Length: 126
Image 1 (cartoon, rainbow, N blue to C red):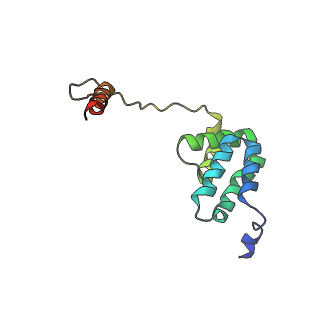
Image 2: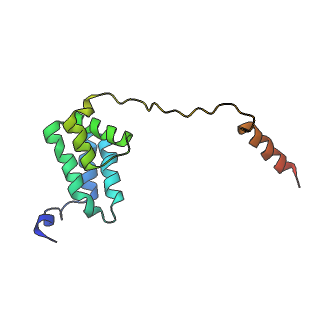
Image 3: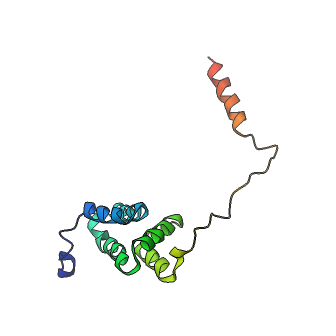
């Protein structure tokens, strides 16, 4: 291993997860995502360390809030979390998505009742 990576040889996924759990469940989920996304967990150690170390600068509460926002927007990455912290988005409340698909009633839309009838009909056939 290169000298810059040798300092991480004593680290393991459990150590990062325990450290993240001390901050909060959203932080733990982000770290778990990073560790499982990588082919080898060691590939994500620097990103995990960077996220967790940012608690010193921004505080545990802000880091937890930033991780929660990153999970909500589908971007649980170090760069996204640090960007959320730098811009102060972690201090703003999460908004619910505006888009909620509404299916209008139409004669070609059958619905659940149709399939329940079809299911019971197919069970009575020999």
